[in-house]
Length: 355
Image 1: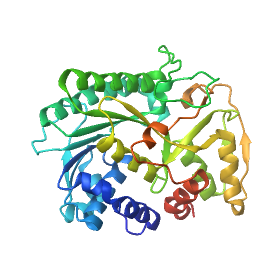
Image 2 (image 1 turned 90 degrees about the horizontal axis):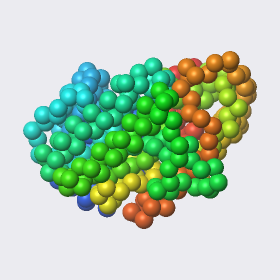
Image 3 (image 1 turned 30 degrees about the vertical axis):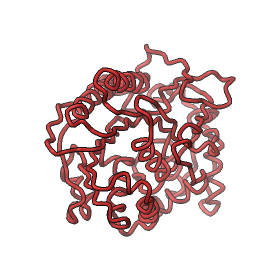
Image 4 (image 1 turned 45 degrees about the vertical axis):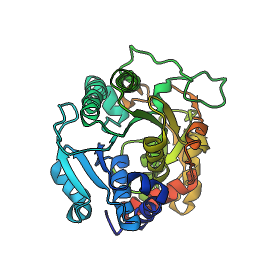
């Protein structure tokens, strides 16, 4: 872990000090796919920190595509013997022979532009990749598995609902290539519960709202990172829509903590929303909030709508406030609000890069 990132270090120490979770994972081996992604990386760091703080004797197998990148990301954890690498493509059969107790499956496409430019690959990674990890979970007879899904499985929900629970579903246009991600996630969820039914694989589903915080890549293409770059580079925030879509968000540390609780305490075949209900805000309101947090940047929000926005991969305008009450029953709660999410993300990895 980058020891210079004090905000990331603080987050991982908070997660690593959770003795209830540390006891659940004690002596176990956890297999993490998408391990160099934002959520995967912090899950690996947090489990490693449990070893340091709680002496939990957890071993993590990080499944990665780029071995060189992974060795850099997990240099300290590999050297200390807490993490080993399994190099491979999630779209190919997994042949890891080590005894595995838990699986966190986070390998997935994440960029809206990628969904539009590569819809076939987006769908196949969701379905074929998830089938491969479920086959491995069946073979390994794991104690638990969690599939990282998305709020996008809800599509465009009924606008009359104040909040969206795990049983509420809206419309998805199957003839839109942008639906490759949301439809792929829906099918992958169905595949998970099918493996649970037919092969007794103890898989649970975490439906994450948009999640950000410490250590988000400076080059991340998602809207929250774009807003943070505008602060760092002192550039106005330019919206290509009216910014009326309302969503809830989740801080990375809270999301990783929720994933651990779902993995260890969740019920097989069930889905759990992972979000902070207090963060409900429109895109435009969020942009204005960011400007207000850093008034010294001198930036403002401007709306410039191009004639054709299809290439951006934006979702239809909607209001989608996830209800996290079911996840709270597992002993979890969201702690970090939207303003602090931005402060911690920007001060973690954006201010220095933008200078």
